[in-house]
Amino acid sequence: MSAIWYECKIKYRKLDEASGMLKVKTEPFLVDAISYTEAESRITQEMSAYLSDSEEIKITNIKVANYAEIHPFENSDRWFKSKISLIAFDEESGKERKTNQYLLVQANDVKEAYDNTVSVMKDTMGDYTIPAIIESPIMDVFPYFSGEEDELERIQKFTELKDSVPVEDVNKDELNEKEVTV
Image 1: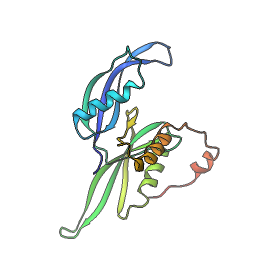
Image 2: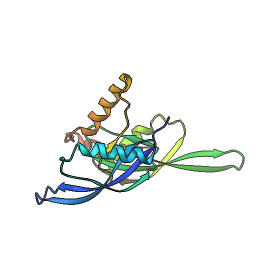
Image 3: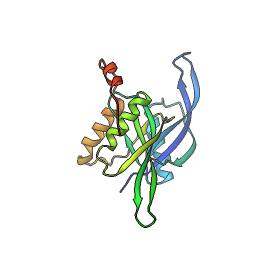
Image 4: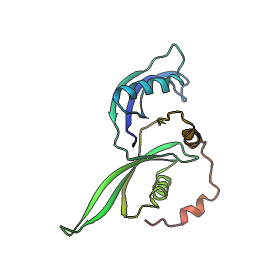
């Protein structure tokens, strides 16, 4: 069964790093759930870990997100929405048809998001293009794990990748000189 991702907008008090004061923020988060009710319950549960007992959250909006796949990457701190156009040839009409999908990819900048998208798509048998990559406002992603033993390794890997700290790449100049082809 494929995941259904819900984008939940949450209003809560968050410490502003610049001023050091608590400010009311409204930020989107992504949860994997089977219904709006479960999405509401899960986001409340997930956010309670970040708040004290006296603080409350207000869920301002829940909607189904249109992401086909979510891909966390090690040493990345932001989420990017990659638009993928899958190209297929329709033999009946003799025309090319494009089907769009959206991936949520973790990266530090747009170039890295492009590179990560290409690495995710490397095993794709058909032709595709990447017409757009934009930074997503998504603050964090909370996948669903049932707690079964076979999923324990999967949740550990996902959490390690999601929470990893960006590391400065010493070979960055070399990477910038290489061309990436699709």
